[in-house]
Amino acid sequence: MPKTYQFDVLIIGSGAAGLMGAIQLSEDLSIALIAKDQLLEGSSYYAQGGISAVLDSADDFNSHIQDTIKTGFDLGNEQSIRFMVEQAPNAIKDLEKAGVEFSHQGKEYDLTTEGGHSAKRVAHVSDKTGQSVQTNLLAQVRQKSNITLFEHHTAIDLLMKDKQCFGAYVYDKKNDRVFSFISSKTIIATGGASKAYLYTSNPDTSTGDGIAMAYRAGCEIINMEFAQFHPTCLFHPHAKSFLISETLRGEGAKLTLPNGEPFMHKYDEREEMAPRDIVARAIDHEMKTHGFDCVYLDLSFKDSHWIVERFPTITKRCLALGVDICSERIPVVPAAHYTCGGVGADMNAQSNIDNLYAIGEVAHSGVHGANRMASNSLLECLVFAKTCAKHINKNERQIDDLPTFEDWDASRVEHSQEKVVVSHLWHEVRRLMWNFVGIVRSDRRLQSAQRRLAQIQKEVNDYYRLYILTEDLIELRNLVQTAQIIVESALSRKESRGLHFTLDYPEQLESAHNSVITKTS
Ligand code: FAD
Ligand code: SIN
Image (tube, rainbow, N blue to C red; front, side):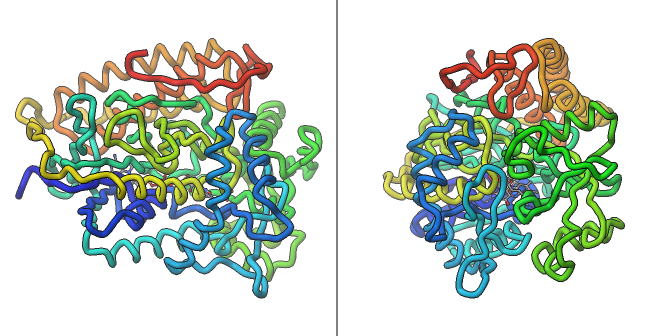
């Protein structure tokens, strides 16, 4: 078996961003698409709510742009937002071409709404939008002979020479070997970092790998303090990270305390339709003030046939866990959901390192600012995957001139007899982030987290040097690195804005600025 592969383009990640990028790349390019789990595993597959786009004659681009800017607390980049919003109807068409059948009412899209949107503009496939997007995009990718798929392959670190990127070292889990994937262009599409928190709506893949790899390679990492908490994840001992879509609130569901009292009117005049940061903080406040384990979401006043048809996935999953959403309230809690910051990327998805691109949740494309508006994320994946591919298609190929790299050297390490160290530190990081770097922050708690994370990183680095690589170790190393970046970004922001709320600086500063972290800073 070779130790080295060569491709024109290496795409790391097979979520909506990675798959759409692969589809849009020219068919005369050789492409490797790698994923650390099965190809469909990742946040994209679990997306429920939908994709925002101006598709109704009563809506307009300006309104989508202004809602996005306002929800992002004026930190978003207006040029990038305008581009994304104006491309949204085309993104929906691209998906329809791939076979996605959006829900309709008669001939019109069945558009719904979510927090922050001032119009109905969320197109969906009942409550399984992500599943439909992913299965259809993957089917398209599989038809292309220039794309080679590698599942259960985990990128470890980027291959760098003279400050340029030429691919990555990749761990093949099934064969327990490390390969060099050498490429002319590399696209990071690894998703977010919400697994840095103890409670999350995300699948296990969201460990911040792309952010940590890009940081180690010298990329600018922007606005990582803005960790988004989704207000409503199912609260149940056997429901690992199951989301209760915001579109339930879009369809009128009410949040209540255990005694049935509504409470959102105390926090925002938009009540249940306030943006996520406000709803999540309100729930957190009620839970902490009264010592409740959860609050409740009630849609049971709606017709049960309609509920089952509109929300088949949520109805089924809740029922399997003993909650009949047609007749009872759903116990919910906030959980880490989305990473608004990420690898700095321009309108072509280019990072500050030559040949290296970032698309999807891993990227900071400037469209979310201090708080992402619901259903703008899949949209961002699709739009910037396309501009990224266009940029690569236009640029000359250099596959014949690619540099060589040393094979991965595993000769100095041995099998660990102490894997408990990895699992212990993994849990410690996630609990620490939940307790000290969560919905409400303070300098004191952030500084404690920073001190402990620095010690943990040292322990992980020692372990990494001594023992043979495993996927858990790769992920732990990245999780700790990303957690440190989140804390450093949070400490650098001396204000409260959007998702970053700190007791020490409760006011928002007049001028908005990005926080930028690089390895040398
Ligand atoms: P992902 O879909 O997360 O894919 C990441 C890929 O990278 C995976 O293939 C993974 O295996 C791979 N990967 C990661 N690290 C490595 C590595 N080291 N080596 C190799 N491969 C790696 N957004 C919306 O707009 N609308 C919604 O309705 C919506 N609902 C959501 C519901 C849930 C439950 C969740 C969790 C998120 C939801 N979001 C929604 C957010 C949205 O789904 C994600 O932001 C988006 O899907 C991210 O896509 P992505 O392609 O960037 O990453
Ligand atoms: C949801 O369905 O609530 C998730 C939507 C999103 O994260 O954009």
